[in-house]
Amino acid sequence: MRKRFNVVTRDLHLYIGLFLSPFVLVFAISVFYLVHARGEREAAVLGRVISNLAIPDELARQSGRDQVNTVRPLLDRLGVRGEVSSIRHTPKDHRLVIQVVIPGRETTVDLNLQSHAAVISERNTGVPDALIHLHKMPGPHNASIRVNSLYMRIWRWLADAATYGLFFLTFSGIYLWAILRAERRVGAVLLCVGAISFFGLVYAISY
Amino acid sequence: MPSRTETPPSIKPSARRALNTFRVWNRKGHYYLGLYFLFFVWLFAFTGLLLNHSWKFAEFWPNRRVYTFERRVEVPATDSDVDRARALMMRLGIKGEIEWTAARPDSTVFEFRVNRPGHNTSVTAYPEEGRVVVEQTETNAWGVTRVLHTFTGLRAGDDRNDRDWFLTVLWVLSMDAVSIGLVIMVFSGWYLWYRLPAKRNLGGAALMLGIAACAMFIFGLRWTY
Image (tube, rainbow over all chains, first blue to last red):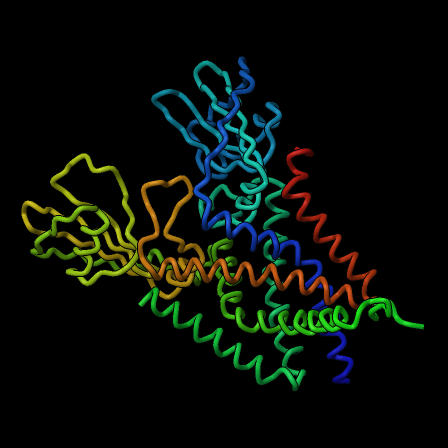
């Protein structure tokens, strides 16, 4: 019975670990870009100018998720797809600037509510930025509008699954180590040293 | 008949020894690294969930405590703003990462913020009057935990700030070390799996599924959207 449990745990550790390993690489490699790169950004390329747009009247008055829901059909008509990351309204200029993101590309739609025109500019942000974007999403900012696209809904689910899977890998890993008698001593020492360095650093930095 | 995992007899004994040593240490390294970084991985995984979900039980900002006090302190004159801020922090008993918040149009006021997980301090010094106004914001353990995930001392696109607290540097180094450790664990795990011929097909399918999902998000969306 116990032997069977060990085999199942080892197999689950292996297969779940293999499935999650690319996600772990995405989160681990993006840390270097997040922590170290200051990031020179490629300039946005001005693209299309579209006039005679039918802009819903309530768009300027709305905020949060309602505004995103109203702006979505408009973006579809303009052929702009992705996660609406922010909407900035400047009433003085009658402008609504909508930022739409997919990993590696950023599109800005500058809507003029008075002239019913839109200027669409695009910026290719590349693989490093795609990794940073995926690492940070959905994140705590702009929570009222976040996760408004299909890809972000799937990514949120996958990111959660990767995290819960990582917890499983750590617990099953501890179990698989603990049943190896020959490795217990060295492993226990490393576990203690790791705990001391972790809690010591956290204590020093925050108290 | 030799199994597929056995070393071919054509390999020199010294190379075989090196390969065996590599295999042993690859396996040991996989769980030694995992055990050493266990608490770091738990912290970053758990705080990742906190950041993505904004769960009510982990709220910290509404429960923050704010203290304001004023002191008569001589604001030292030094060559650089960082040295000046550090000298002032020492006199006020504040420690943390210095953050320059804005350009200073008013040269009679010397302003900066000092951040560390759980503590954000805003310092406004009036050198000519010899006084300093300090506003301290303290958050609970949830606030500390969450900020540890993002505490790097730098923000993207911000050239005015640099890491100037040695503990920030140490924390960032530990983030790097955890990331490197995880990358090594992934590769050592792949090798451990490759050495199990009976598990190659199912394992390969799981790995390919993971690679396809990630590649779709990193490269594929730009083509399909």
